Image (cartoon, rainbow, N blue to C red; front, side, top):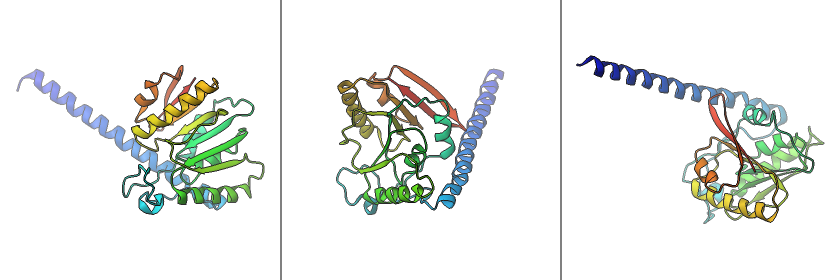
Length: 233
């Protein structure tokens, strides 16, 4: 074996172990944060930590459902959301939208910030019921938290109100659904041009968002090995 080939093999082996380490580190970080989030439910009596099977049981045979059989809900991470919000200025009368809100963890967290209103949309009626119940429980402690509205709807059919200027998306669905949602967002923006901040966590389909050229600014970062993007018009 030539020395040049040996060097290439050594480099390939080194890269393999580096990538393996990065992947393992991402998994460890994710589950450490997941386990640390359990305190939230224990402290407030809510149900946001558990994962639910998103099959026919949770979509009520909805013909527009994009959930594959046996897929699970994936709650967002508290520390990650708080990190995203750390350097964000919230203008007066701002409205926050969580797309694919699940059991409503992010809507609860957002309600402790200075938003005028919080909206969560979710296709599953059962998950929406859990999210509304969580809101009632959470308000027993945070009585002055922002009003939360949980809407059962398909993201592709949701007509985005012209006052929404903050959107959170934790990669809740595939590129086809995201394309239609962003199309609706473009219509809302053209109806009323405004500054919109779009949080996209675990941005698997970033190319879909960037296809529309609606956002002028983009900040890319990583929190404990989990990638996220903050777009703004």
